[in-house]
Length: 128
Image (cartoon, rainbow, N blue to C red; front, side, top):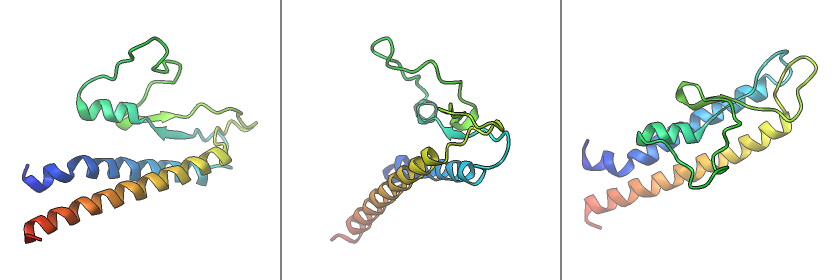
């Protein structure tokens, strides 16, 4: 791994995870009226643990929510709804839209940070 890869690696991976999360949330919104569709999300705790190869530990009992269902490969997890529809659909449109808006803002912030990082590396290489 060269110098530039090391400088942007974490941010590039974060951008990839944020992009995948937005896809999952968009899929949830698109299937809001599909009978028996189960809403999903990406568990960042699992993704972060896999990236660091260290489990995240709580310092006090109750810090880590053990009530959530276990995450699948890639950090995917089924969302636990507040209210389940009569047809078995677990998508709550207002929550999914709010989560998507927050995820879009997070994605944009990560992208802007990555652009600034690349710009500063470019300036350093030019000698500015």
